[in-house]
Image (cartoon, rainbow, N blue to C red; front, side, top):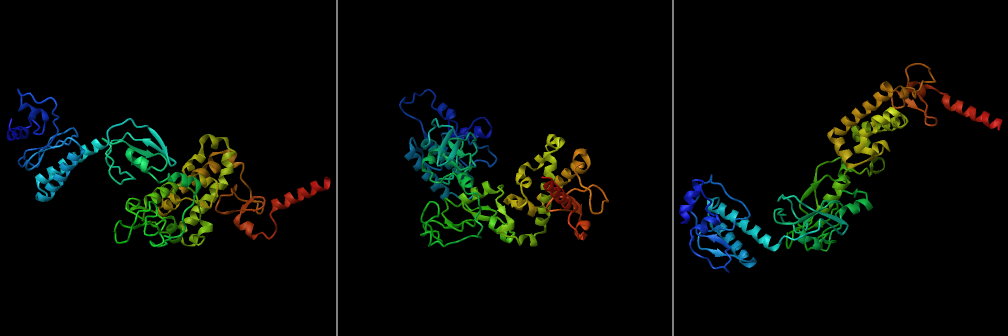
Length: 439
């Protein structure tokens, strides 16, 4: 059957012009040599096809066409020659023409076939440990992942690839023996602290004009490799170690209250992603003046202090324990442990307004249980011993003050207007004096 006839039948929806069965049917009755392996890559020149024709992108397709001549590829070297020929044709064909688009698709098929020959399927272990990475074999067939080692696409359909369960480092199975970067999670475990200087650059000459990580020669002119600066470490990296990923820099947030993402290297990007929820920032010590310029920080600090005052009520209340009220803060456990440690995610949510809304809602829920819903918690309230008037007081109320020694609660106005000592402290002191006399 002639190719033009097959093409006509294809346009009518009867046959695929590149189907091997149709090609073999044209030689029906003829016995091909038994030892000949048919691996035709290009067939004769096809005529221009309509733009709305379906295109078969299956990887099992063995037959490709080119404008002129034919080429037979049976091994890696011949496939490389076919790929080079396709590249040349793409440059020669008119821009955006149908023939050029078809040739590009054929080039993709050829490269996939070449990759398949280079990486034959093997029985790979499901878990491998290397440089503190715990690599797990991936089953996803997505082709949108990039190998962190060779910086090329991972073709999930025909390639085996692994992901580190700790730092999410991805690589081909063939690239694993070339990895020289340890798992970032180990650094997070051993060194849970940020670089708090803003882009501490030391200069490319101090790095001996080499990548700070893999030591590849680099320069600002891009010869032999482009030097890219990481805004977190201040050092320069090559294009393989720095993919122009962006991240929020902790030092810029703390010192300038700036949340604009900056370009960072791959290692810094992973480190910041793993550290973002860790409460390691003590703002009172790092930059205490920040509370004078960011009103939301003062509000959040007051809410956190109130929650710490509510915590003793919950851990001694059976109903609160059964309702598991403290689990409202399970994503921010440090909020029920202290009031001065923050994570970078806390500051990001604070700047967007999400933290104030969620924490105010939790504060209202906690106060409602103590003051309205639970009689046992209400019984743990205080009466103002200075004026002996008013409702039951709690230490987290806005109009109250707490004695620093005995933690008794008074009206704020009564406490500051009183010139004498705290009545509860005086009573406790007198009781201790009597006990000492009896002894």
